[in-house]
Image 1 (tube, rainbow, N blue to C red):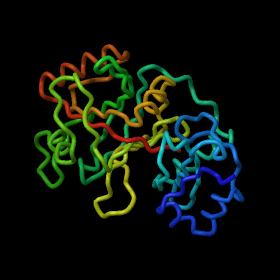
Image 2 (cartoon, rainbow, N blue to C red):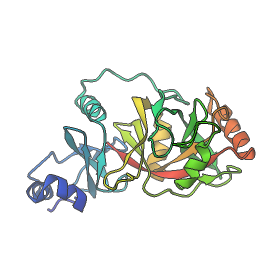
Image 3 (cartoon, one colour):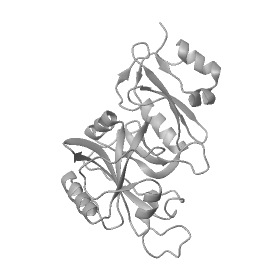
Image 4 (cartoon, rainbow, N blue to C red):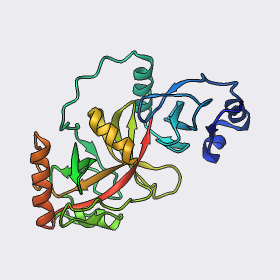
Amino acid sequence: MPRMLDVSDEVRAEIGDEEADRLLAGDSAAGGYDCTSCRTPGDPEQERTSTVLFIGDETAVLAFAHSTCLPSQVVQVTEAQLQGAVRSINGDAAAPPAPVQNAQAAPGRAAPHVVPEQAVLGVTSGLVLISGELHPALVVEPTAPVARPGSPGFGDDFLPLLVEQGFMPVTELSTAPSVLHGWSVLLAVGQLHAVLQPNPNGGQPVAWWQAHQPLQVTEGWRAAANKHQQVLLFAAPVGSIGRQPREDLLRDALDRAAADGRLVAAALPLAGL
């Protein structure tokens, strides 16, 4: 029986026709796998399966996902992210700490063509209730005002810069924001690693925000992300949200920022390892 394996043109271009044909014939890689997105078992003999190729600076890892979770694609990651994911897959990494409901990421650095390189972003994960349904969300807030690149450094252009990238102003959290194509959220071995944006020079996406250490997310957050196949990203200027210890307080802060005209948002598709 032929394997129900999807190998996209971009994955085939990276691994070569010979290896792609071996995969499709079942001559390469194990039959069963743990989905790189939802982390539950899959079988290409029984269900449609995507090949997802993660490429670091020196290493590439071919992973598998349910086609209902992720399409076949190539994802560019840092070598450190890739090696960390490989250690986790092989069971060599130390057991991660128990996730908390409203986890905080170590600060990351923003890509220079959106905000200045020195701008440090704090990222909080949580579940947000919209129209009676829970959505996985990331809330991004800089630790200081963000000036437009090339400007003297006065004022705060964080929201205008994001609006120029396609994020939309939010006045109330009554409906989920629309999808911002070209951007995505990178989950690796069930942990949050980066927010990816289109490469201004073409080619593979680049990191807009990248965690210094992978951010633990809850089972509920990951389940909601797999259900919706996207993550809602909310962004607000410094001082608008703060580091809220509970999701109800986070929601209150988002509502206040939206009412004050200090919130933008977009829905970002998932990428995963």
